[in-house]
Image 1: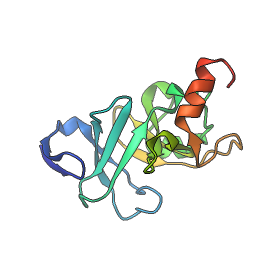
Image 2 (image 1 turned 90 degrees about the horizontal axis):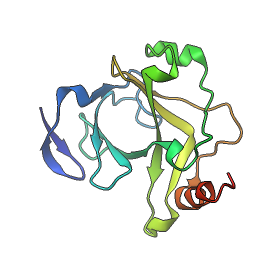
Image 3 (image 1 turned 180 degrees about the vertical axis):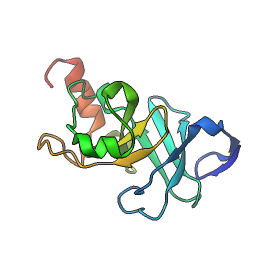
Image 4 (image 1 turned 90 degrees about the vertical axis):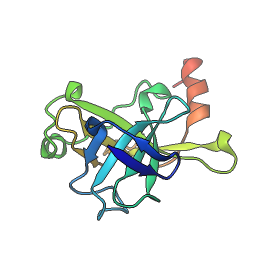
Length: 149
């Protein structure tokens, strides 16, 4: 299917990349249809709205820089989108990239969870106080490599 994206113009994506967010994403509750695209720069992903081209999110797998990441999302929230166990899902954090890119942060308090089979997603709030809205990716990646996380 053809998708008009904010970052890449019009591109061809597989129908299987389409993700439905029944409750939307915080701040964008009225938008429900997205596609998940590998970003040109790894390890990032691009979550592009199919309803409003200007709405897109940069995502990252938080375990890349926080191997200990476990947001402890309540089971009932996961069940709402058909997830029964960790193997059924993909987990991402929304990335904010400021002008000084070395200061990019990830929101570990509000993870994006996607069911692998049914391709339903939701944003949840982690009840774990360790996870904040702004985790400095490069600092924490460095700390993880040095074994200080």
